[in-house]
Image (cartoon, rainbow over all chains, first blue to last red; front, side):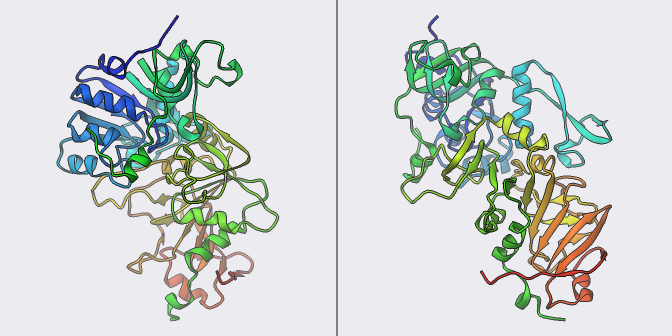
Length: 235
Length: 227
């Protein structure tokens, strides 16, 4: 078994117009910038993107939005230091937004990966974000039914990976990565270091390789925050 | 009536008062912005463990400028450091800590708090781009959900009200409010005044509050150091 992908272009060229894509990261931490920029080079359109945020500056997801690749964002917090790419298109009616509470977003993705079509959560009960959703009482308290979230592709950044797709992450860059790896039909992961099987202690594996379809080594990956401090623009 | 701006507590002083109620070893989540100040005023000998919903328990002070690791940030996307005993986890585990009742205290800001414990703190309802983040999750599950806030809006309207007029974050979730003038508990659908600034009378405080302030026993003096 060898899940190694040999170029960023090969890794993302399989993503077609209209695809639903989960992209890992919380703000810049864990954002797979190199995979996103390779996707921008391929320029598929009419995408649905699932991420906690909706881009910052003129790189990463913000650059995808500026290239008019994104028809819909599913996120909890479409604000950042520089959210203009999303904000301008949203206010002009050019991009759709599904706003999801952050913990519900995480659990919907987990449910998608775990084969659980719906679950009940106290989050959003009695608020406008629960409108139209079934409500049930359990032990005297009201809960809102939420549905699983699945994707055609996931683009995720991890720290170490082996050719079987076993992964470790870097600090809080883990965030949505392990959940998104489970919830997509085709999970593509960039790792800072790609190793042979056995090089990662099984006790430290965070994402087991069964959830990963392809891994590509990107040494010394860019950090969104650092690129934005340098006022980087892509392409 | 006393000039409120002359006597009211600063944000730092409100944060200090809230910090006095955090026990040693408590697991605490502080909302982005003003609530983050609470961590500066831990009581002597008390060490709380701070949770940030993006996936860290027991983070510490900001790093020195130039020492930032941008994979080591808090929910406000600011760089942090780790204390000995820190841990990382993914988002589903992080919100299991929140919704599953494992946090001792969550401290949040507010636009409005109702006497029923309803909280409005995520949307001004005026259009624009909606953004909720983790606010609707954080109001459920912590053993205590406290709010820190100015007693009044910038326009001078009460923030403590009988019913919220803005979009809700959660229903019946807040248990205590620390304001610039008072400490108020929410019990059985009522505001119960626990402490007030000595410089304001009960009647004046009631006039600045949008629902009835109840009292049990004696009302304590809200005394906070200069900060």
